[in-house]
Length: 282
Image (cartoon, rainbow, N blue to C red; front, top):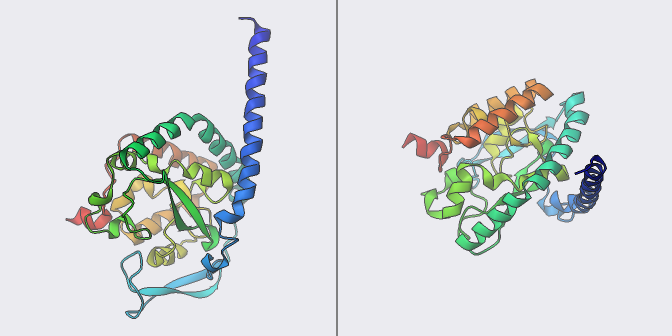
C-alpha cells in the first residue's frame, strides 16, 4: 500500500469527520434552545442566577431529597469563573464529546437494540435537571427502568428500587453505560465532561448544600470528584462538600485526575447502591 494512497485515505477520513462535525454542531445549535426550555418559560427556574438557602416547611410537599421545605433566594450569585472554566474547558468538551459520539456509536447501537428487546418503549429517558447557574436543562439517559417508574423521583427515594430496573438496565447502571447519551448534552453545551453530577430540579437540599461551595455555578459533569470518591453511598452534605473541592481545584490536571479515576471506577464499581444511603444502611 503506497504512501500516497494512505495519505488519500487520511484526507478522506478527515473530510468525512469534518462533515459529520458540521452537521452535528449545526443540529446542536438548533436544539440548544429547546434543551433549556426556551420555548417553555413556565418550566424555567425562577431562582436561576440566585444564591439560595433551604427553608424547612411542613406545609410543603416532600421534595426529591425526602424533606419538606423549599428554596429561598438570599442574593445574586457572585461567582467569577476562571480562564480555564470560562474558555479552555469548553473547547476540550467539544473535542472529547464529538470524539465520543463517533467512536462509541457502535456501542450506542448495541445498547439501543438490547434495551428495545428487553423492555419495549422509548430508548432514551429525558429528565429535568439543574444546570449551570441553576438553569434547568433536559438531561438524557439510556432508559434502564420500566415504563411504570415514577418520573421525577430519584432512585434512592423509591420503595424497593430493584423492582423497577430492567435486566439490561441493571448491567448498564452498574457500569454507568446509561449515562452515555449525556455525551450529547456535553456537545450541545449543557454539561461538561467533568463537574458535579446534575441534580434533579426538585432536589432542594442538594441544591442548597452545593450553593455553600459554588458548585451550582459551573456546568454539571458526566463524572466528577464525588463520583470517584463514593457515588451512591454518599450523604448529601458529604457529596456537596466533595463537589466544592472540585470547584476549588478546577483545572486541566484535576480534570485528568477525575477522568482517569472514573475509568477505573466504571471497570470495577462497587459503590452503586440501588436506593443509595438508605439501602446501604440496611
